[in-house]
Amino acid sequence: MDKSSSIDAADLLVTRTLLVAFEGDATECECPRATAELIYARQTVLPKRLLAPGPDACQLQALLGAAAAAPDHGQLLPWRFVIVPRAERASLGEVFAQALRERDVSATPTQLDHAREKAHRSPLLLLLVVDGDRGDPAVELSERILSAGCALQNMLLMATAMGYGSALTSGKALGSQVLRHRFGLSAGEQALCFMSVGTVAARRPARARPTVDDYCSTLGPAPTSQL
Image (cartoon, rainbow, N blue to C red; front, side, top):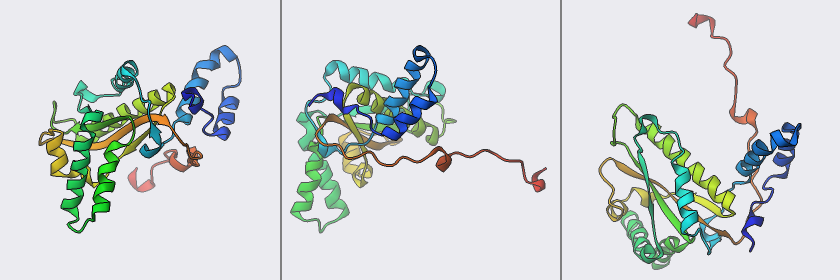
C-alpha cells in the first residue's frame, strides 16, 4: 500500500471549505492550506487495522521530536513516552491479562486471550505517562495533562504527515498496580493512554465532525446583578 495515498481527503466538505477560506494569492495560501488539510486529514484508525511497516528509526525520532513543541508551563517536562518493543509485547499482554483477572475473577480463558492479543496490535506502541509531582507544585495536574495532550496531538499530526495511521487507546488496565509496576511508574505518575502507529490496512469513512458553533460561543454582557 502506498502510504502517501493514506493522506487522502478525509473530509471533502471540509477541504472545499478550506479552499474557499484560503482563496487569494496561491503562494500566500499554500502553507496554511496545507497545514489545515493535514489537521483535517487526521482520523483515528483502530490498532487492529494498523499493520507493518511502522515508522523506521529516523521517522520515530521525528515523531517523538514533534512532542517537544508542545506548550509546557514552567518547562517542567511533566510527561514521558515509553516505547513497547516487539520483544516485550508478550509480557505486556500478560500485564493486560493479569489486570483483567484482578478486576474480574470470573474472566474466561477466551477473554484473557483477547486481553493479551491487544498488546500485539500495531507495529509501534507507546505509553504516555504524566507526572503530577515533577518540578513546581504550583503547576496543577490539569495543566500537565493538557501539555501531554498537546504533545500527543503533535505526534498524531506528524504520523499523518508521514502517511501512517494512528490511534489513542485507554482502558482500566492503565490504573492497575501490575501495569504501574511493569512500567516503573513513581507515586506521582499516572499512565494516560497508549499510542499506536502503523500502516493503514483498512480505513473507515471519516466521522462527521462538529461545527464551530457546536463548541464555540462569544461572551456576552455581564448580568446586571454582577455589575
